[in-house]
Image 1 (cartoon, rainbow, N blue to C red):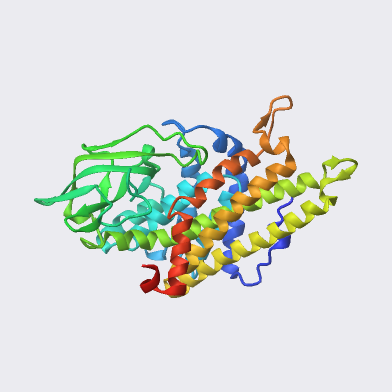
Image 2 (cartoon, helix red, strand yellow):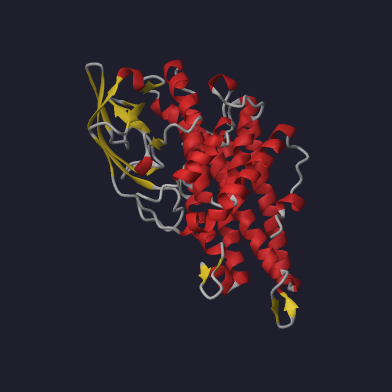
Length: 403
């Protein structure tokens, strides 16, 4: 199947450093992810379905080195955020839920939070993450709080005791938690929020069975319950009361990551559908000769190009200036939206060959139904798309108008 990104998309503005990362990540994805992608993308969640082999392979291949500076064992790249988004797109081309769980979740949300932490935490835990020595979780969402992470919404409480804190509460939708070792937990501490690094193997921490979801099966999520779990003072990430700012720093890059994964899904669906249209004949003509589909997929080529450019611009801006809130919101909106739209129309033009998961006669697998299921979550998690529109509107009209 032809990868149209190689001919429709021009790398003229991309640094050579990033092109080499793309080559490395694509070779890894081709060799390690592609052979098992169908199984990964269609196997329902269970405690035994954590993709440990692929997680370990990513660490062994050095993919977790890419986002970080050299002093903690990283690559020390000039444009680490751009490289990270590039890796996400290459992994997401075959398995978006693997990319989301093991790179957006592990390398961005957990890893970037540790990278921004004080030296005592950063220097101890970030090198271990880069080597793949633990599975990390990022816990902000709760049963009644997800997009709204204000102090009035968060109910997980960390009460000060001698030498540390006692945590009580429930976190929900926590990626990798069924296999997790450490969990960054946003808690209420009196009238503010604080991020705490918690050992998940201690007494007082329990994890439910994995949630059974519509899609994103590799991304195991579950409830994490805290019942008087103790965390020592030296596991406060940043400062007491700075938890929301700590979380948002990682989520801005995470939103770019969702945009990159959206581009990956859109490109994969586009490639499959256009290949099919060039071969399948209806009423004696290839589908690609029908003007309706020519125009439809020409427009989708434009949308993929735009979404990818927005993601790369956001990443470059973050690498150069350390801030890209509005651009990250735009990237998430564009990438997640185009993934849903193309997946839907790719199934439409491919008909039953888009709708089927496995054709049992010849035992042939098809990718579009999984892409369709996986694409929807991109419009919801890491800040619903409506919130991203609000972030953009705030830049246009100002806080005095938008709140």
